[in-house]
Length: 283
Image 1 (tube, rainbow, N blue to C red):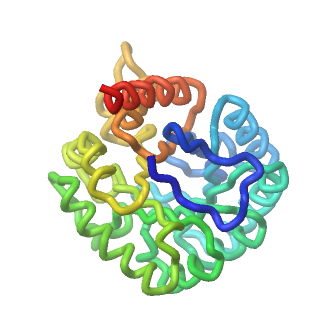
Image 2: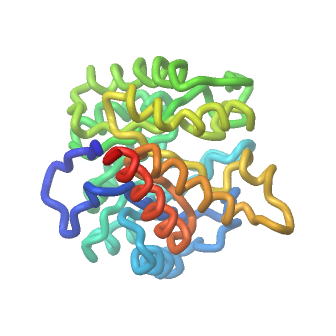
């Protein structure tokens, strides 16, 4: 399985024999998924450590919501919300990723110890982001982007395919490569739920295996609590239970990592899916 190369040795190296688990900590008052449950430095640090103890390999910290209709905040406020959390977790030896579209935030958190820049715009929103990605030598997650969620210029896909997503991602990756980002620092994310109907998100996630096979870069899948799963939730199956089920499937197709809100069930799903993949290869 492909894995990105980090600039320096990690205190706790990421797994090379299974899908990695990226645990989400949103330090926002208006998150679509947890409604500000972890808003505040102490709550966020506590939550991150719970996720690590439950099996998370990476903690993805976010200080600005990207849900449709959310209000943009100044990068200085985003930095204020997350910087102490990033520095504290990094000092503990935790691999920290930061979910941001702002280059100023990306530079500040990398200076504070973050190892991964997770830009949902794939360096399309902030014209200086690609340069910051190159300057910091961080691992860079480039997400498929078709405009800001809920904006007038968002180009929504009614249906999609692995080939279409990879072709459009290719143009985004070329942009960061031209800025000097090293190929071994790049991870791609098909952007489930971003500028995609539920049908299009299902098209893409069902093609995880093709994404992995065709991509020149490791593939991260971020499906947790997304609208296309919430639409299926009912009294028999919660959105978190559906997330766990899908984690097993994408791990069985070779995803480098999954980005999820809870660790316990998803860690077990990764073990199952990875074992399935190994058995398939061994046949």
